[in-house]
Amino acid sequence: MRSDRKRIFLLALGLAAGTIHAQEKLPGQAIRVQITLVNVPVIVTDARGRYVPDLKAGDFILYEDGIPQPIALFAASQEPIHVALMLDTSRSTATVLGKIKSAAADFLSQLRPQDQAMIVSFDYEIRVLSRMKRDVVQLREDVRRAEVASNPGTKLYDALYEVVQKNLASVQGRKAIVLLSDGQDVGSRISREDLLAAVAGWDTVIYPLHYTVDPQELMKKLFGISTRMPTAGDRTWRDYERQGREFLEKLAQESAGRLRSSEAGALKKVFRQVTEELSHQYLLSFYPDPSKLDGELHRLRVEVTRPGLLVRARPSYRALKP
Image (tube, rainbow, N blue to C red; front, side, top):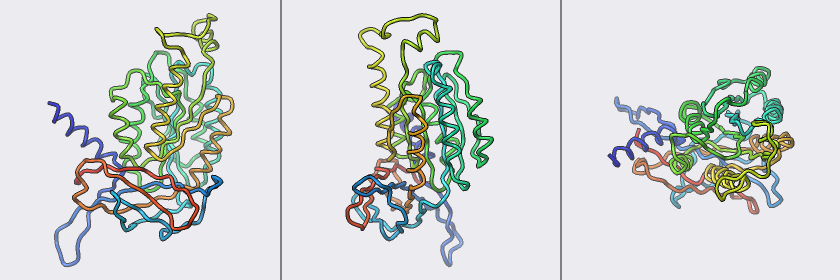
C-alpha cells in the first residue's frame, strides 16, 4: 500500500514537475521518440539589488547535478508571463479583504499588454474566479467578486497544488503564482510535506505576500467581542503568525521566489515590487538525459558569466519518463 501511494504521488509530481513532454521524429526514422524539456526560471541582480536586463542565453551556464547542460530554449524578460493571483478569503481576512482586493486590482493594472493572469480564491473551497486572460478590466471585476467565507477552513495547500496541476502545468513559457495569505492551512487533503516536495519540482515561481491582521479587531468583527490576544493552549496568535510566515518563506525558497510581508493597507507598494521582478524574469530550458527521468530530485544551479552578479533560480527538478 505504501509503495502504491508513492507511485501515485510521483505520477502527480510528474504532471506538475515543470517539464514539457513532446514527440520528435528523427531523420530517416518512422518512429517517434518522446523527449522532456525542463524549465528553469531565473532572476539576476547586481550587488546593489538592481535587476539586470538584456542578458542573452550565452550569458548563462546551467548545471544539472553539477554537470553543465546545453541551453535548448531561452525566454528573455520581454516574453509574456502567465500569473495566477491567489487570494485567501478565509474568515481570518474579514477585516482586511477589502484592502487586499484593492491592492490586487492595482497589481493587475500594472501587467503589460502581453501578460496574462487568472484569479483564484480559497477558503474552505477553491474557486477559479477567472481563467487565464489578458483583459485587465474583466480581471479587476473578477477580483471584486471575492468574498469572505461563510464557513471555517483554509485549503491553502490544496489550492496551490490544484492551481499548478490543473492550470499551470500545461502552460509553456514564463509563469508565476502571486499568493496573498497568512500561511495558515486548515482542511487540506495534501500534507505540508507533500506540497513542499512538489514545489521543489515545479517550474513556477511563487511570490507569497504575507499580511498581518489585528486579532482584536478580527474578534470584534467576527464575534462582536473585544478581547486580549487570542490563545490556543499555550500558543498565541503571534506564534501562529510566525508559523505561517515560515511556511511561506519555505515556498519562496523552493520556487526561487521571494517572500514579502506587509500590513494589508500597504500591499500596493509590495505588489509593485513583485511586478517589477516579474518583468525581469528569464527562463532557461534544457533536455535532461533520459536516465534522469526517474522521479528523483535532481539539483540545478545557474551561473552568469558576467562578474559581480547574483542569481536566484529554481534549485531542483523532478521528472518521470513520458
